[in-house]
Length: 73
Image (tube, rainbow, N blue to C red; front, side, top):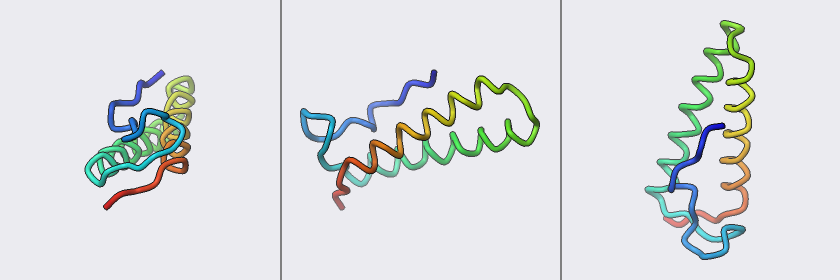
C-alpha cells in the first residue's frame, strides 16, 4: 500500500480534525492528482489490478482527510 507523506498531518494533535495550511494543502492535492493520473494510465492499459486498488484506497484516504480538516489560507 502507498504510504501518505507528512503533508497529511494536521496542525492539531488529534488527527480527526484541525486545519491544513495552504502549502501542505497544495502538496496533498498534487499528490492526489499524481495518484489519479497513474490510476488512469493503469486502467486504460488494463494492467496491474492490485496497484489500481492501492491507488483507489490512497486517493480515498486523502479525500477523507481533506473532508475532516479545515483549510487555512
